[in-house]
Image 1 (cartoon, rainbow, N blue to C red):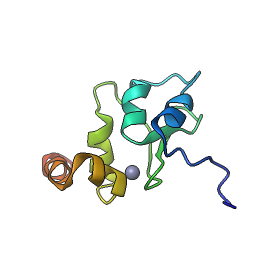
Image 2 (image 1 turned 45 degrees about the vertical axis):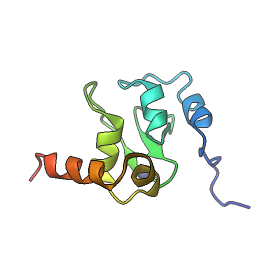
Image 3 (image 1 turned 180 degrees about the vertical axis):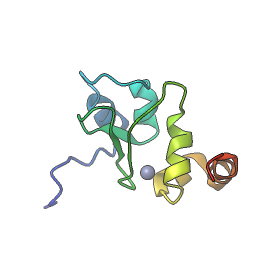
Image 4 (image 1 turned 135 degrees about the vertical axis):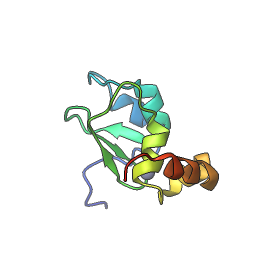
Length: 96
Ligand SMILES: [Zn+2]
């Protein structure tokens, strides 16, 4: 029995369903594919695997790149995109 009230969100379909009726600047299919589901609060999403939360999305942002930028240790991210992708995103990060 999980103390967590969320269902697992381990499947793409479950995550996509969480965006039903949610206005979001990013295509929900792209977010769901990158491991994110909607919390139902504004544009805030969570990763089902690492639990990392992201909000304040800009329309030009890529869900995978944001995932790699903020949560480079996520196991789902590394399995789906690989260490090289994560490294490249980290190197591109213009923030100091
Ligand atoms: Zn993650």
